Image 1: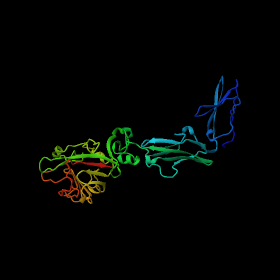
Image 2: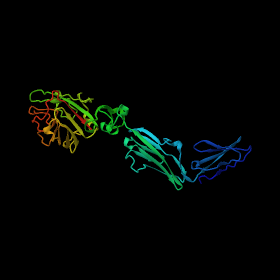
Image 3: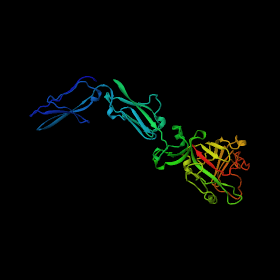
Image 4: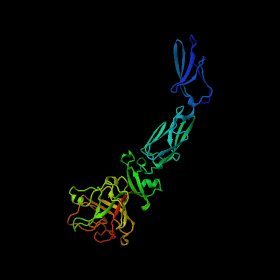
Length: 394
């Protein structure tokens, strides 16, 4: 029993008189060496439990015997195996964190892991065994106290780990954030500018730099396309958005390709023309901010249709900034895609649109690419000297 005295005897005879040595298995500690052969523990504790070997030896040889000592009592946490003796762990976001909790005691204690508020452990990323808790790719919002509790018939003991997760600041490849939205949410003071992004938060080999707008509508926007306008080949071709992003196209769309070059160069501000690879857009979010110096700005969310996934159907848009007051109550509510003409953002009418992102035009298609009221030919736009636009995703 815990706190009781214990004597382990080891009687050995021989000529010459043998020496006796006690050793605790698994640790190699020499505990006693005396002719009487007795190993005395004046006040047994749970950590004394284990196997002990008595070795008797003289000039003619050696013999040994092993006995197991089990000290009944409440569990004991073995401090030498803790992840942090202070109980404080600081780790960067999306790294793995391991909390050790080795215990001893008899009867064998049952070990459980929990949080003081009894909220769930991170789903799908938590591994629990008796002596450790592992959280894979821990997130900032998972900063918390994690408790290891060991219990048997004689009592219980616990070890508390206070885990602080430092958010990624996007200031380098190894510090890449998931996207601009998460960066703003975790570090509210983040200003607009260039940051490193790593949507899958795995290997940083595929991380890249991008521009974050951290001001419009609360921030969190990643710039995916910055464009100007270029005149078509003849009078039937109106101005085209240029460069064009790598949206799906029909093989016969080569005529348009000659007028508006394809870009997969990430723009680092709205003055630099370029387009992020279209396959990356959907990894950044489902909301799209459509900026222009000619018509109203819109924020669009996925419905049955999606801009970032290139899917026909309904979308939900609202005006984020008004440039054409008479159209301030109007916004797109439908996306129509086509491998030939590209994409239209409309109010449900196929023949008119707010935005038309062209891939290829025929001699029968003229009209404007923008209209703040969604009328196509209504001329509801600002006559800017240097017409520009930019799309963002969050």
